[in-house]
Image (cartoon, rainbow, N blue to C red; front, top):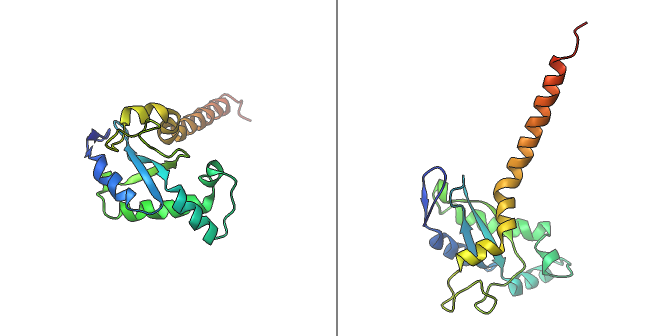
Length: 160
């Protein structure tokens, strides 16, 4: 379990299990400790996703390009929204990111009993986690500074 900054506790495993019920999602890690909302890092079921793309005539070169396609993101977003309908307000996944890696015990993301190695994954996807939680806030802060700077300059202009 982890605690959001608002003080609500979230048990990630039941949410991850619901996400993994989707044919499109192979593995999921729900994150958000000390953050404002819950998010997820998702490893797609690439075999199913490749077949789905073939049926829908969606072209891609590799898995890296595949997870950036709007059609794929929209389809997985629908799956996440369906799971969100079964969750409480504070448990809902507000943002997610797809990764190209398939998580296995051999590559180190899963234990031999197929449980997520959260510490390993948190380090492995540190940049993605920062982007989920801090990218938007940095932009807002920069815009506020620019706005405040312009307002300050306008106040100092002589009046005619």
